[in-house]
Structure formats: C-alpha cells, structure tokens
Length: 309
Image 1: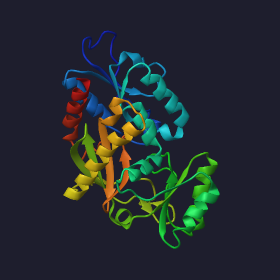
Image 2 (image 1 turned 90 degrees about the vertical axis):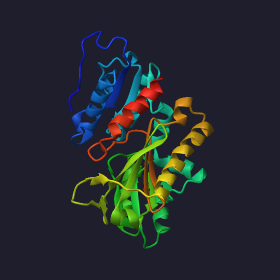
Image 3 (image 1 turned 180 degrees about the vertical axis):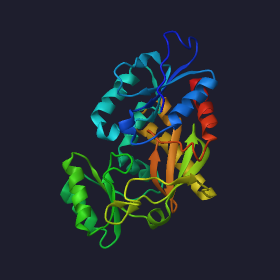
C-alpha cells in the first residue's frame, strides 16, 4: 500500500478525509483496498489520505472526517487503540461512530442482538478457566469453536471436539492473557461450506462475498495457516432480509445504550450469516473484498458523500 503525503495547503476547500489503517506488520499481508478507496474519494472531489492510526505525526484535527478502515492490529494493542480512538473523537468526526466501534470490537455485542430477537450463534462468554471448562462440558461430544471475545483474523481461534483437552487449554490461555474466552457450538454449515458476508452502506444492501471454511478440527487452519478464500456471494432473499434485520437492530441498540446520532446508522456494516443465523456483525473495521466486489468502491464513495452532507 502506498501512503500518501501532501504539501501544506493541498485540497483547500475540499472535505479532508482520513482513511485509517496500520503499518504493514499489523496488516499481516497486502491490503490494496484502502488506497483504492482513497483514490476514488479524490476523484469525487475530496482530499483523501491513507493514515496509520498510531503515527504520532498525524494531525487528526486537520480532517473533516476520519473513516476507520483496517487498523487490524487493534486486538493486540487494545488499550492503545482505545486511547487513540478517544483522542481522535475529541477533535473530529469518526465513522463508524466511536461508541459503536468500542461496543462492536468486543463480541459480547452478540448478547445485544440476541436480546433484540436476531438469531445469533449461542455463545458462552467466560472470564475464568473454570467457567470455560463448564461451558465445554455442556456441549458433550459436540464440536465447538473457542476464541477470544476481542480478536481479529481468527487469532487464538480453534475448532475442537468439546472434550478435546486442547479446547480447554486454549480457553485457559485466553483467560490467562486477561481476555474473555468464547465457547460456541460449531455450525456444520460454516465448517463444511463457509458463510456469506453481506455488506450494507448507510443501511442499504450493497452485495456479498462467500468465505470458505478456515478452521480444521483440533485447532488447525485449512491449508496450515490463516487464509480466507473469498469469492462473490449469492445470498438468498432470506439471508438478505436477516442482514437488514441485523442492521436495523443496531439503531435500537444504539438508542438503548445512549449512543450518539451517528451510531444509529453505520456508514458501513458487514453481517456474516450461515444457516439462517448471524455469526458476526462487523461495524468496526471490515474489509470490503473489492477484488470480488469492485462495484463497492462507488457505493462507498456515495455513502461518504451522503454522510458529509
């Protein structure tokens, strides 16, 4: 990715937009989408720059809007990222709304969707090793997924038979690191065929990708290392309706939690669905899969333009 720099005074009179990423080490691989989005915003008449969230030289107050894109090392720099988010939100507008991002980074948000009547994967959130072991016992001989409630890129995530000692060991390791361990039933639809990720911009459905299975039983990855196999998706009408239902629930949750007006309508949202169930609701930092959904570029630009109005 090329990180742009501009002379003082460049783009005077334009909307100055910062698209937030991290350094190459934090990205864990190529990420060309953010640069493509910045170029599209510039063609639309904005002064757009790609900026690293932990770059001390960035003047965040100089932006009219900061859009969270790919700060994918936030889960391993959690306290630092949260402090940064507070500082930036104090001097400029951030989308998605900072309170929405704080809430969404911890997957305990799934309980809010369950309370709103949205079908989600039933999840035990375990703050102790003992509670994690008890949750595993409840699944008997079934298969489970164990992971931290704050993570990205399937870090410290494994698929196991519930009685596998490796499942309890991973949960203990997560808790020992000061995190909350999640124990979920493994959905056969996901482990065998994968899932759909549905994109919504300002609440409007924009397309979907299909993500193939990532985890193998025993805590391993398909192919040996973390790899997402992404292709264009074709969700059915029921899946699209469920995605809309989840996005609509965000507004109700924002009101119930006392979030600000921007939080009621995410600029961007990705709803992961399989077998009629919401697996994740991503409103903090999803990739847009532009390689298989190139039309998303123009949809994103229009969505930003509408929010700037």
